[in-house]
Length: 197
Image (cartoon, rainbow, N blue to C red):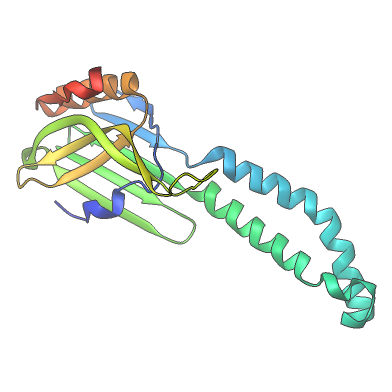
């Protein structure tokens, strides 16, 4: 195994990979990042650009002593929001199960960083569909923060006992993907009874 499995754990509750390519040679799955928050941030940043540009022009003409002087932070905040949107849009994850190379390769890319984890077919013991306890960091209306809730997860278990997260999401989709990966690797798919209920 090359890479660190801990770096491929999802911070969010769900991922939701989709099949991009499926043939005799390989199975390629992809996740395009958190699209809704990314495009929401981008849309807000572009709308606020119509306010930020006149403020910047007023600051250029009259400096911080003019009427727009107290709004100097607004274009800066808009720039930060645009940066967050670009970071979220740039997030990509792929899983390639390559029969020719006899390897599973996980890739995680962001705007400034890329990581790769690869494990050989002979280093895998089984595929597991179980439940992960995902923690919610939000406290709403007096509820306590960091309460956990179960989310179905698909993992590869290596021969030395390490667990590699492939995907979290819809139970039915994970069962289908798990069966495809299990058949390609010729390894058993173990399904936790709690997931089926």
